[in-house]
Length: 440
Ligand code: FES
Ligand code: FE
Image (spheres, rainbow, N blue to C red):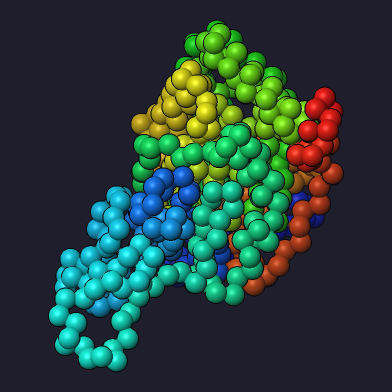
């Protein structure tokens, strides 16, 4: 039995040992067992707009260059010179046909080839000029680019399992392609990275932790009807991925109200989607979703805004967070204004919600100082239900079972759930069907 996760189906009760939030050995084990063998998000294709655009990122401790080469291919390189290791790209972002190492001047193209080395006659005619190194696997799903440092890992779509369906619900919100907007949020939290994974799919905390935010929304809207949110479901998507999905076709409780022209534009957009995809799929698109892709990628789609969140463990009690806003490039001024307003006022590191989450997580971390007397956290909510909802904790248990499997080798059975209602399963109408039967 795992010393970290106790999954008691009898009582039922699910507990996690607080040592996993503090212990440097567990942290090191996560690096080896999880981050060396998962697909990890590096960035979105639309961040690289032109040929030879690049940006630097850190993934699983590696300094990386995320670039578009001269032939428009997305490339990922280890940001280290094959000569003696200096970082080739020392700028956060830019555009360059060639990358020249500042130490001795070796130069490489964005396709990774060595282009020149000063004084190369000192190396001899047979000297094999080294090219840039790359992560063994790079792949993308609808613009989301992932890397893996495990050459033998399953392909990305197999890995993503049921999460592709929820990425589709996000990506279909543009008729061309969803774009990452300029203006990234970066912040850090003095807490274990797993606490933010939990928090990102935790519907239970919203009303108590974010009271101030909802007061602001209430003041802006004049009324707030929580029952308008409707029924929701938490879903195990396989491989540790999980989602909490709000009821279809609800406008939700988030954001300041739209003007009349904004409402008209939004309705126009969704009417167009109905033609393309069918009503059932569009109703699902109009419900909110918080998706966690194991281990550290979160996509929060509250329809009025979509956030991609990458959570990087730095130390057992310290993480760094990067958040990007995803938007349909064709949306008009009013919807864009509302989207950016929500990105700032709700999700922003100085907004009305994220600082409360940061405070809660740092408070948990501080609380673990008492773990000798109080060693276990409880994640049992909704275990006695056949249909877990957004405010239950099935989504976290799903993630933790995968964590436990990779760390300890113990495989825990999937939690049985009642079949999802049809409103949560209806698919996108195939393209031919929409052309032949636009009303269907
Ligand atoms: Fe890059 Fe020497 S370390 S050229
Ligand atoms: Fe929160």
